[in-house]
Image 1 (cartoon, one colour):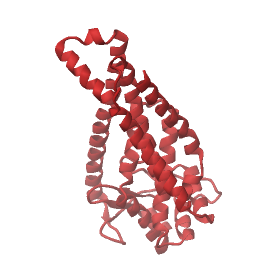
Image 2 (tube, one colour; image 1 turned 120 degrees about the vertical axis):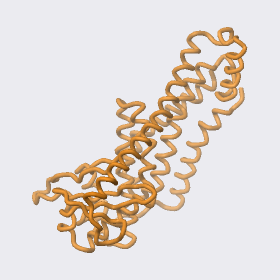
Image 3 (cartoon, rainbow, N blue to C red; image 1 turned 45 degrees about the vertical axis):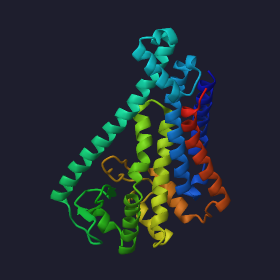
Image 4 (tube, rainbow, N blue to C red; image 1 turned 90 degrees about the horizontal axis):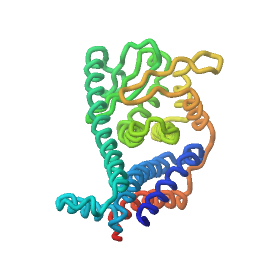
Length: 310
């Protein structure tokens, strides 16, 4: 059972890290590094959950998960599987394979659904959209609410509503476009995909919901940082506030979501505005190196446990 124990410890470490990491504010100082850490954490959690079940089921073989799987296949072909494994062990193996299948099928299903939604959305935009004022990749759509979002893909498009165009001055509009282009350039839709898959596999998990919200906010902050390379923080902050205008400090109608995305929650938008207007220093080089090393260790550990011999 030593292999199962190792996978269980790895899964426990991942689960215990989600809450503190999601509630921490240090990731806001370096969203890009924090996103790397979140990606590693999500990958390690998924691999460890599947590997733990398989390791429990294959424990009589007393070897790593992948070598034990090869042995199981050989026993199945030889008709000797019930001599090597008990019914309880076989149930654990089936559960592990079922979880792995659910994750894989969920990945294919999510990607297919997202691509289908994007195609429909692009077709609709081709009918309703007009060429925007700031580049060939910008579409202007007549919508009754403020909206600005990116439709990612091989040829990404940035969509803004006519209301947004009226509310923002030229500098604010350029800052918003820079933010949305950063989403497309860094493929933030792919950054969010692993957490979407995990949430589909375990829809009732509050930990995964908390992790997804944290990652979504960091993605927005990372795009804000890219926009700040050419625009003042006050300009972008003012533009963001225009998406929730009502004059009394309370949020107004949220911008509609792009396919596969979500509308910004008011507290997340307010957090972004406060971050833009508050002086901050990025994490030191030593801390960033330590975090990247931690992410690498998180990724490699469950992989090495899969192939570890008995």
